[in-house]
Amino acid sequence: MTLNPDADAPNRHLARVVDRTYLGSRTRLTLALDGLADAPLVAEVASHALRGGLGEGKLWVALERDGLRVYA
Figure (tube, rainbow, N blue to C red):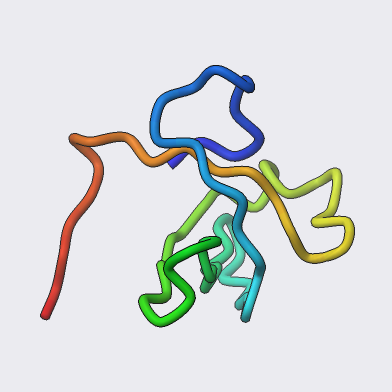
C-alpha cells in the first residue's frame, strides 16, 4: 500500500482512518475505503511514513495488486 500516491496511480482510493495502533517502528491502520465501508482494510505501515500526520483522518492510498492478501 502506498500512502498519498500520485493522482494518476492505479487502484487509488480515499480512505478514512477508523483506528490506529502505534507498534514502535510501524503503525497498524484500520481504514474504511470510500465505497467499501463494510470491508475494513487493516495495514501496517512504517511509522515514519505518518510523520506529516493524518490531517482530518483521511488520506489517499494506492493498493498494489501483488501486495493484497484476503483472509476470510
